[in-house]
Length: 336
Image (cartoon, helix red, strand yellow):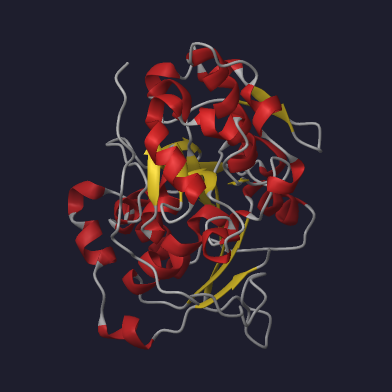
């Protein structure tokens, strides 16, 4: 396989300081009589944070509250009754099998694992020179400060382990890369992983593609056999990896699949869900889309299907800003 050059995306989509405090605690907004208000609370994977804040928010005409954590933490919060959002979106649909077990969900986007790096550091320069076929060599030499996320808290953390295990099999001369490269002090919260470049804490991060695209950072695209993005390799390659969460749930490697469901199906929630799962903002923020998305599992309400039906012009209606959008206030919180 030929060496592909590192990919550069300098289109900065985000402004610093986008997060503000969620006024209702993101537990599901209610009015004084206990009835749920038209403010829609979304509890989401940390990697969705910026896309929801800067892509979804301008495209809907109701206020939206967004809280972002690692997906495994999101699932635990709901399962333990700490949060009760209108919409929940996670980075691995395995978490909808347990502990959440909703009656239905939609797979609405995908992603790939990449090596994001800061080209202004010596370690970043070494990675750029190594490229997609030799990126692990400067890591093995100890010349690159690496960041990753906690596998017990979010899918990106255990997908980093999957990627390194697959890379150990894929590259000639590479053996047990995880044991040689990974250390405990490399772990950062998913919502602040890439921002460690600004602090100088790391030279590179094992990250999702969208995280590098959103911030305009250089990244190395990995071969399909190890980046967890290509369905062609799901059964013969990706599925050979697994990780056991603290709950005892074993998560098997597979194609990266983001899932979403509605827990409180008001008209406003259905409308927001329609934009959330089909909006053009997803591709603009670096996510991978497929023609079959959203792909539903379970007993999906008819009005949800109607809200995401691309054949009847719904998307131009749902996705277009209105005068109400500019006046809507969206509160965002990120707990790390």
